[in-house]
Every structure is written in structure tokens, then in C-alpha cells.
Length: 403
Image (cartoon, rainbow, N blue to C red; front, side, top):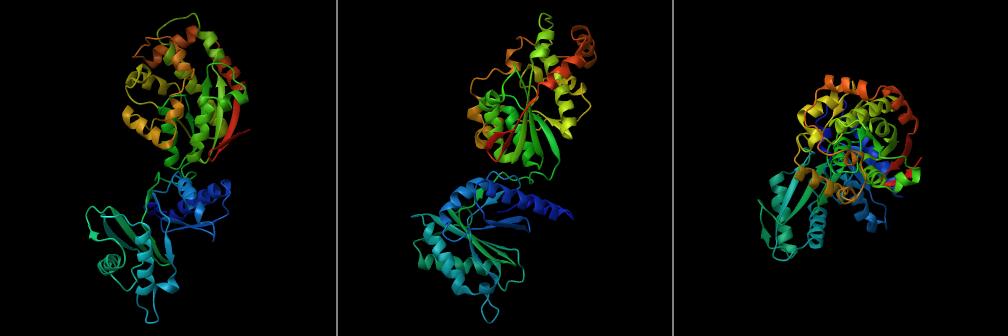
């Protein structure tokens, strides 16, 4: 499994490698696999125990969701003592036997192939060209493959040479890439029942953050109701990428009752400011360094530039918007890929959807402060009562909740 972003690091590269190795081991154990794993040189290797090869597809699927890993493959390993013969030359007999067997497994009739050699260990007594030509020739000679295409092959056979051995593989799967969870600090993400915020959560996990979640529900919810809701199921699915997340849920009841009967057109922006202030207090309690939400500039009335600025200015804590310049179709594509889209489109009574229509698209922070003082004179008490009714659920590696 390759982790190229880690190789860009300097003296602290080993810290990122240890974080990735720790995450891989944890996910394997949670899934019931007591397999050995180790990280070095921007990659992670998992040793498959004898007689457990049938479990490899399931493990590959798990690893595709691990932040920090960009590509994954089941490989054939030739250890260092078998790489070279008695004359300290390439042991072509073993290497050719392995590549022929691999090519036979992945044979496609009338398709083309190429051989790619990644020579990380420069001490190996061969060149990339010699390796490619020799192994390509033996594939043509000893298997059903009969077409070579070096530019756009139907199948590519890879050989990676490291000091700890040669790795041969063909079916390279795409991972999520980025940096390992736990290497970038803790953030608190505002999770709604929509499409965007789960993608924002995924984006921050992929950049190495520990991500906890916060949701303001339309009414008081029991622990079990939250667990069974769209929000609970989104949190469970996201924990496949975040590894471990706490979901905090508080009711919007007190704020809703206080604001009811005072139409101004700014209800949606006022709600979002209240949401930010609650989240900021919670973030301080759990030692999160920043807030995260799924805003995309101009997508809806509450996400105009003016309203985004007004929302940000009501708090002091940094607010990250990883999707701010992302188009809706791009967000939907990511949501489908991470498994949250189908959950997000289920009916759910989100606070934003229940607030009066035709919201103002332009607001000014100072004017909203005046309006809040007028309509919500007991603002601090509203925050206090809402915080007192927090419910917390924990999700880990796609399972849960507990709490």
C-alpha cells in the first residue's frame, strides 16, 4: 500500500508513518484480523497468514478507506535472500516463474499488457529497461498474452524493488490518499442530514484530522432515536474513514421557541449563528482546534458571501469550509464514492429545512448583533440550556454507536 503524501514530509516523516501503521493495525483488529502490518518508505505492508488468502479481498476493501493510502494491491513477495543468486546477480529463474504465474492469473484474451519496474533499491544489479524487456518477453513466451502496449495497456504488471525484497502485483486499487487520521489535530464538524457536510467530514479526515461531529436536531431525541436516524447512520458510515468519531446532538427547541413569532427574514442566518456559537463552546470542551462545515459558496441563500461572512464573524474559533469552491455535481460524486449519498437523500427533518422560506441573501454582522439583542435577550441562557441537553454517541470503524 503506497502513501506518497508521507514521502513529502521532512524530519517528521516517521511520525506520519507510525500514525498510518497504527491506524492500519487498529482497523485490522477491529475487523477481527490479527495480521502483522508495518510501515516504511511511504508504504505499508500487511503480511497475509497462511490459509487466509480468501480474506484478502475483504481486507483490500477495508484499506481502500484508510486516509493516507493512495493505492493498494495484493502482491507476491520475493525476499532479499531469493532476489540474488550465488554470484550476486538477479535470480531470474524465481522472478520469471513468479511473473508468469501472475500474468496467467490476470490473463485477458486479445488484451495488451505492459511491465513497469519501480527501482527504489538502486543497488539492485539491473536496469528498469532490462527488467521490463526480459519479463515482458517471458510473459509473451510462456502465457497467452500476445500484445504489448507501453502507452495504454489493458493490464499492467508492476515490480517494486525495495531493500526488503521484490513486490509483484497487477491489480492496483485506488485508495483515498491524503494523510493518516490523527496526524493533523482535532476538529469538530457540523453534520446535517444533507449531502455536503458528510463530504466535508471526509475531506478533513483525509487531511489527517481526528473529526468529531455535532448536530442540532429539530427536537429532543433519545439516544436510540439518534442512533437510528439519518444522522446516526451517516456518522456510522463516516467512521469507516474517521476511524473513531463522537457524535454530539443537541436540540434546537429552546432557540426555536425563543425566536418564534418574530419574523424578520433573517431566521436562517440567526439559526446558523446560534449553531456556530454552540459548536464553538462544545469544541472548546473537547479540545478541538477548529470547526468544519459543508458550505459551498452561493449554493443556497444562507451560503452567499455576505451570509458566510456574517456566520463566521459571530465566533472567534477558526471555521474551515473545505467545499467552499466545489460544485454540487463534484460533491455528489464524492458522496456516492464514500457511501453517504443514499443515506443523505432519505427524508429527514433538518432544522434549516424547517425554517421559514425566502431567507435574506445578504446580511451584516453588526445589524445581526442588534437584531439578536432585540429578539433574543437571554442568548447566553439559550446556549446554556441547549448544552445541558447534549447527547453523545461514539462510532468506530463503521460500527456503533456506543456511549
